[in-house]
Length: 261
Image (cartoon, rainbow, N blue to C red; front, side, top):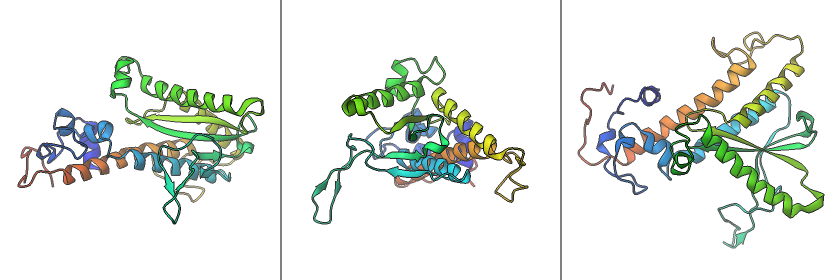
């Protein structure tokens, strides 16, 4: 929690100056002191963990609405994954890209299954910066969303007249926690679905005997905060772990003006 706050307030992280080189090969710079190297640039950091936790929360949210959302549903795409799976004899096995979360058609505005494709992108990355993410809010998310849909368009072309039996829905979050514009549109549809299901029943999670806090006692506040806190916590855990793993021998306290207790 302390690391989460320090990163939010742009305060030097305790012991961060003891890292002179990351195991990814990058040498120390300002991004090391504030932890952002492991948040956005490091190829070995928290990206997969962050993605998988957000995926699981979204699937759990749908299940709270009594919908049979499934995770990592394989066989939807003809596109192969970037990693190769092997069988018991070590032989390569075709591994087609799955849907992160597959939402049943009964819960969608199109009547088709929606294949949610979760992505977390970095607004400070070279590609995003070169396309002015530093001057336009949510530009990085927009770029990633377009890339996802361009890839999907190719799959639609391969499918031909038969088309595909599902609708592709990229859900793009920036590493800061911000939702892309298309992801905000998806959220409004989810909120409308919950309202329709609930009818005139209470919105209070406390009154329904569910997990709640004073600031997260309704459907929207609870699940939006769950996603945001998951991203912030995963990020902080990754930063703390990598500062420890890459610490130079003999470094005891590199920012004595910071209380590290």
